[in-house]
Length: 200
Image (cartoon, rainbow, N blue to C red; front, side):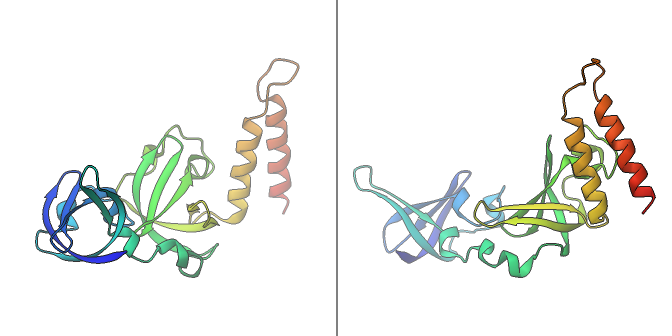
């Protein structure tokens, strides 16, 4: 059920909302589709909202509501707004050891895998090339609406460069040859592929 409510007070974990004389909790994770660090930046006491009732616990006299559930899911229009191979400006939201999360729109974050960040050079952490809050141009590589996952790459990286990075990552994962020299076969494959690319 969707009800109208009024924000009573704000807490670090969420907001208390008056829904017709009954006090309900709006957790900070249910305020919006985008990640919210400071609730004061999104809500204020006295603000009127439309919220959806998520849980009723009559024994503990607790009601949980969601503002996010009452808003349109941005992932439903993802393919129309951000089709594969299209380029957009995004903001680096978070850096992890395996890659960088980039926000394209509220509630829409995509991942640039660390193998794509070096643009031909191997790096140990995304912070070597990016910083949180930085605006960058990205290209949409793959969309998985069911899992709500979006794969990205630098807009300047051509499909061929991406293919080379994927191949390099695959080769580097291969086990050492019988001679015990790690990467011997991988090095040979990379060399052969590089020569083939240069002849194009």
